[in-house]
Length: 340
Image (cartoon, one colour):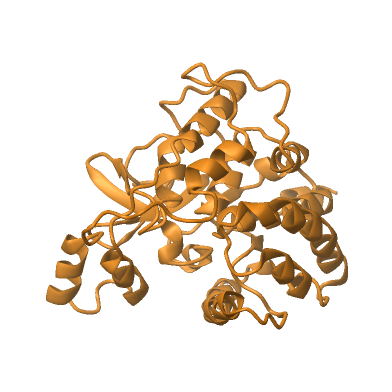
């Protein structure tokens, strides 16, 4: 038991929209009993986009059971009102602010002319996928309830909303929308930010939501750079870890065969994202870190459909993940979710 407790464990929670969040909550419920401490007490929690919301909630003291209950529409009874006097927003509020599955009409101009100009004058310095996000029209949606949510959780933990959470690191990945460079809030040397601001930045999907301004800089969804940001753990200066668990709702190692064009297109994108994730996994393993990856499988994908922002499928995705993720972690690799 001492040997297990001494192992340094990281948790990586990837992007995936509303349905990715529901799937991840189910996977967290399957993972939690397998570890020797609460998930919020692990040695590193790294969240990107939807994963940043769940990661922040865990590090602010929310239990996995509470996360699952919140996905089902309940709110933890002992969470006091947040810094602005409001209660923890329910999932319906978050879904309504996200557009109920459809983005609000964007603004009639390019999202980031400055980034595009930088990419043209300094070719090769910005990831092509990030450059593509600059071409999207400027989004106008805003999920301000995410800041309220984190504020309420931090109040429960006894931390003011002006600070970061104490203890082991919480890293939240976003992208500077003018420079195109990835920013990891919570990492040493990162720009100062509240957890709520960082979460909102990490969730600001280009073309859908307005960028989050922090310290005079605009930030967007960290998922435009990497769906999990796992590659950060292969870089110099990464924290020393013995093992990492990666929950990646936008990757898959086993697929369904959808007939509708939207789902088929989503699976094609998913295959590309999976190859990129596999490369990041290999880089982290090369550093001697044991990596376990859990991804949606055919049953999960059938539950998700082709639009990861569709709230009407959330309950089905959650309940499916509760079953398939547990089977995957128990067996290592199954036709449901896959753990490798």
